Image (tube, rainbow, N blue to C red):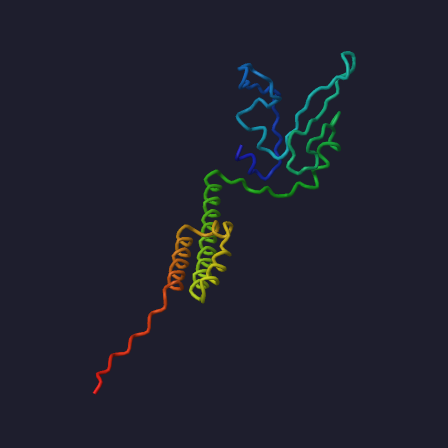
Length: 201
């Protein structure tokens, strides 16, 4: 399937229709969930367009009319439609304008995994950088606070949403800076040194 999807040509995959049965969780009975193509695994759902053909009869005596049910269409042009007596003009032509001359190469699960890991690493690096910047900003502002009231006001800006963006290490650094500055502002002023007694003469 990987080879077909990566090929520089358009591929039509034909298969017989089968019923999709599954066991009901409550009753334990087998129920018909719908239809599937008799093929391996998710074969029918890999391509960009999935069409299910069936013969429809309005009555027992009427002639059967082929109907194309568009089960899947990544282009969105035909998605969800049922086309009676499908022809090239009604089924294929609407998609022609969207077909390119080249096919994007399909990636293996390993390649996708590597790309996902790299994307996650970039996101984590960016989060760490922003966290460090925010922590540096608040620790600096705490150090410059000239009163307990001003320190409380700055600390009040650290809403839960902002704290959630900080890493555990940076959040601890901010809390220590706050506590250190609070202790310094609340410390009583040092008493003036007593003048030495003078010996009278």
